[in-house]
Image (tube, rainbow, N blue to C red; front, side, top):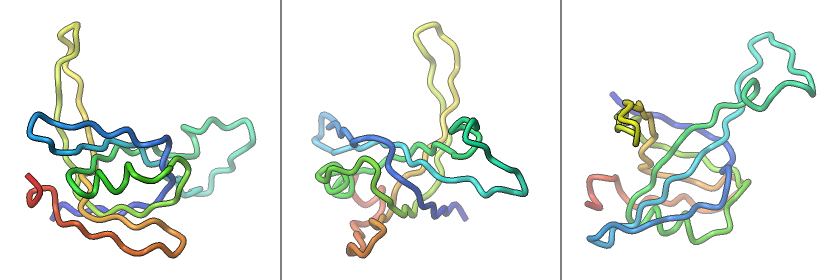
Length: 123
């Protein structure tokens, strides 16, 4: 089963784009705090030592709703699936990618749960 649930803060304002078929796509990064695992973090620790930066992508109505709000820094819980892939950059080098494809999300702090169906349903 390919299922993931993560909570964190949205890194920056989500900037959606649209396909030729008018499908809204909203990529964003979720900042997720790592568990300490008996490590002591100091003020000098870099953010990469304390947090994971998880790439997420929402499609269709979910993407539209996510992009509607001024959402940088907001806490959110995302449920979805992991999709691994790759592309070739301008130099011809293969770049591996890993994204969470958003099925559902909820703003933490009391807002209603948003369930707009899965990625497959909106295409």
